[in-house]
Length: 278
Length: 356
Image 1 (cartoon, chains in turn green, red):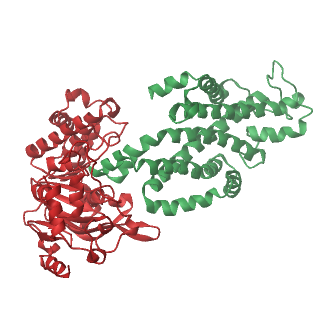
Image 2: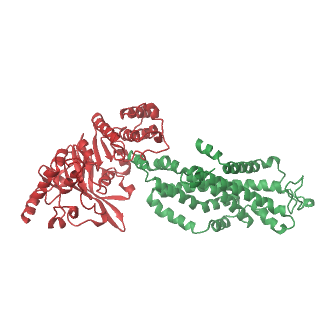
Image 3: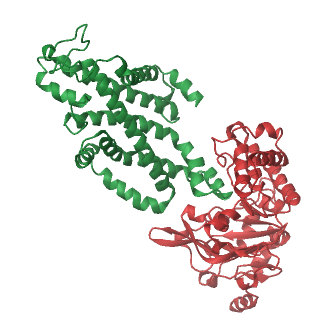
């Protein structure tokens, strides 16, 4: 663990992306302390460009874009983190069981194969549509959409690890199935699980933005990056900052998450050819 | 020739029922048949295998790769299901109980407690992310009510017993910090820490270099004496068998083809296959520089077993009956052999030339 952290700190991309992520999370978490009320309407100040009083300008209701972007970031981060946690939990438990017990594999994996047949975006739209728009149903929908992906990764690691002689040796001294999974298989499969987690985080942020762009996410007037983009479309030529800043927030966050995930994979996976670079 | 065949069949056929329960045998495997499902049908990796082991005895199962040695040992531990195999017939009497009828939970209590296993690869038999001490303690904590401290103390004692210097320090180290020989000692310690009655060692020295091999074999012999256990040693190395075994069971293509005391097998091998195995040991009785003996052909594939005696395509003495009828294990000349021609002149002659 300590060597992993030290190794990551030697990778410039990892350091930069981590710094960006920390900044985004900090801004989102501390927003209520310093940002203006994201929902305060000021008709006199509609679509004003970036200035000293509104650093990122205002939107079509005269609301401060900076505070809307950071407040939207709170929701995006909350959804991204929750989705990756829930999907990791579901995927890890089911992946361990399916990889270790052939009977579970035959049933559960076929079910998840079916789930995987739907593109995750369509699946998420259908689920959010069915569950109704709220933060909780969005988290649930996205978790289910990403569950099969993590399950596949964990399942294949488990199938590989169950053939390891130390797993067989553990069975031969009488260790029970569940403790074999938790003590001998899971810790050795942690690396790909963590890496998948960062990618799911990034995609969940993106998918959340897409859903709220389509009006399926968190209901207005609560700001999200997606619904800000949707609202700003009409004013693109008139007030480009209205589109640029929420868009930039999405790009920077997702890019940082993906870069961090890449760096983590290079660091944790000894087979990665790019592992020695950086 | 016909008369010879009749004569050989008159010899006593070994009846699996002979080995009844509780007649002083620790392990009695009777008619064990294990199949694997492949390409839509069952193939028999181990077919009607019977042998037994008395308390304090070392029995070696020898045979080449694919003869069913490891499948036999995993079947005894009931670990074969994890490999995709299934025991379809037979019984495995251990200390008066049929292990094949034991529930999973009963079997779990047997594993590591009364029957332990040592695997071939010390490099991979230990989990890389735990200290060796914690892996040994795990076995103690599973099978006893001991506290963590007691278990740890016993772990250190056990490491000392298997000849690891500075066991207090070594116990806190990770597998990658230990050499191959050390790791195999740790694996042995892990298997023996609950004082089992039977140790199954599946090629325990194959992955080690010759010096370490001798040390590990010495260790097993010493521990067997000190801890009063029995050893079932699986090996393809006739030299290891000669050194360790009280009795030898020779397997070929899933069958036991010869079984007897180590002296019987090495001095008077009756089966042409055993003779071939012994003849292929370098330097046994050959001249320096002479060509090493090799048994022609290779082990048949499980899915493609020859009719009759499974060794017949490779056997220099095969006659018509060998290609039709599978020979049963029968008592000939003091030990058991499954060969139609075990008492026939050419085979008898061959045994004197291969034995020393």
